[in-house]
Image 1 (cartoon, rainbow, N blue to C red):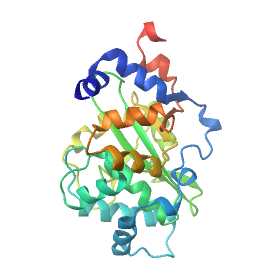
Image 2 (cartoon, helix red, strand yellow):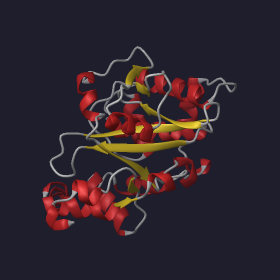
Image 3 (cartoon, one colour):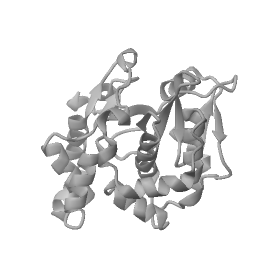
Length: 269
């Protein structure tokens, strides 16, 4: 089984095929609420641990969603040191992160999705990469909807950042990468005292050449079911392959670039 996992994780053809099976192109103007975590999940499926920890955040109900999201983000980032990747069920991931035994960007995005959801905040998860195979970086961040500002706003929990335009207006994910590609100034603003250890790499992750995508069909109950059942027996990549096999996988939705043209070798396009 480990050999199979290594094959899918390292072999270039298997790597590209795996991405091809979960990726699709969508015009940004047809985006709507596509990828909104709230549309694919129910409160009944959320582990009790999240509600228990949520009481400690003690959100002010009068705050706008953006202010609430920042309060959640500050609590999570300042309470958890992070570390190596986890990628397990939402309950196990939170448990490990609370013990300060791990947590990369995707793990922070995963638990932030859930905390926003149980607090009535619309949330999306985004990814961005420089290439599919032998990538220099792959990164996850989030986006929440603010009723007061009437827009989606990008928040990077792992790096402790929000992104503002030249006038100080918070940017959505699409606005962020649009501004970067136009060569306009973007403020990378830290919303707390936390400073990422690799903050010097932030301009490489968020740049004019980076390819962003939404992680859609992100069903917490599906992830939890398969990982809780098999995480002690199989590697995460094998479990994710199983979820793909039964067609309950998440989707990578590319809204600004044709992923085939930008990220696949010529012979696969």
